[in-house]
Length: 372
Image (cartoon, rainbow, N blue to C red; front, top):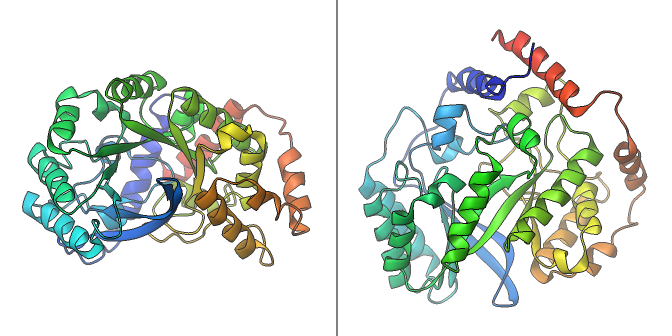
């Protein structure tokens, strides 16, 4: 087969149909999810509350099958059901009442099932309500995440600024700055120029932004994956933002899970996350945090690990790094276990085929087995 621009979209739609036929979990539109990320706020260690609202599905999931590794819709949205605007507002009211932001959490991140600034998920009416609710209970910094195309709507940005007097922090899923990798190895569904335009729109308004960069991309070697993550982090930092290194975990109902069952994919080692940080300059590391290696919604089958002897120690060190931005915390565990040598061998592996050839052959096999 020839690698076509529509190939990852066709594959992801087939994967979604394969899993959508399974029994679905009970649905309560008034229930949302809250978990806490280790972070830094106002120069101090901070447990950042992440509120995940149950809304309509991610628009890219519906149109293009979604990202290869994402199973967010399993708990955050279901395609065959709709949610009333008042239900979404009631979820936010419950979450903010529970968190008591004025007393404990001045910075709260509120996410929908895909993009908080997509009007199909969060309407203008609901967005205004969320902002007003957050301000009323004492939220000082309102965090959200969105695909970059929705940041090009100046009306939505106007609504944000007109209805909230605090600060904003906007997350964008860049994943990779490489066009080929972002499309064929992640199925992200946008070009880098869209990301650039979105960033420019935020910078004009002095709105802080950060990029999600994926570690654990399918089809790449360990070295290619690490080096692409480094380049992508630097790309985001040059634009003026921060970066979150998202260490891939293994979610069901995804292509990465399908590949994993056929020994064509594995989650990255925690050593890979440390290597990414090692390759960055000290001033760059201070603008990066590492995420998704020990908590996620929905709960994955597997988190990234090293080995049974050292995984918990390295995870704790990564948490320490996130709280302090001090790379010495990670250097203290750099020689803690012999399993690092095994990982180094994988890191040095050089494939005979180019990335394009490997991706093409992988999609040929996927297409045959999925009969597409």
